[in-house]
Amino acid sequence: MSKVGGQKIIPTERQTQRAIVDMAALCFPSVIVHHSPNQNNKRGWGGKIAAINNRKDGVVTGWPDLQFIWGAGNAAFAEIKRPGRASTVSDAQRSILDRLMDYGFPTAVLTGPETAYQWLYEIGAPRAREFVS
Image (cartoon, rainbow, N blue to C red; front, side, top):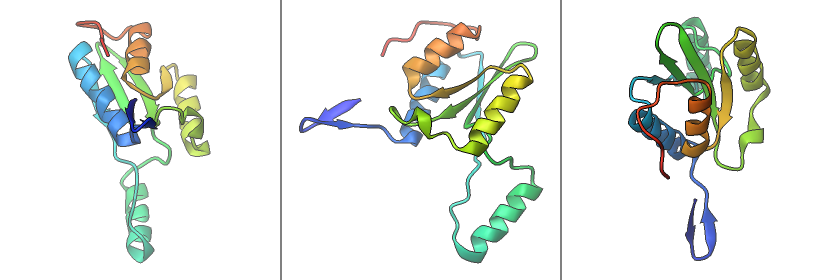
C-alpha cells in the first residue's frame, strides 16, 4: 500500500486483481490464469435483461474472480478482495467457494500478490521464480 499525505492508499479490487495476475505471469508462467466476468452494472430493464441472459448463458452467481489451471487436472479458484476487505465475501461467493472445496479444489480469498504467491506456492503451482514485492 502507498501513502499520500500520510494517508494509506488502498488499491481497488481491480488493481489488486491485476497485481495478482501480473505476479502469476511472472512467477508462475505455466499456470493459466483466467477471469470470468460475473457482474452486471446495467440499471433498469437493461440490467434485468442482462441478468436473465447471463443466467441462461451459464453465469454462476458468486463464481470466483480468478481460476488457476496447470498440469493434468490441477485447478484452484480465488475470490479477490481489496486489502483489509477479505471478510466482505458475499453469501453466494462463500457458497461457491465451499462447494469447490468440497469437490477437492483449493480455494482462497486473496488480498494482494504476496498472499496469492504464498497460496499458489503452497498448493503446488509450478513456480519459475520467487516473488519480490
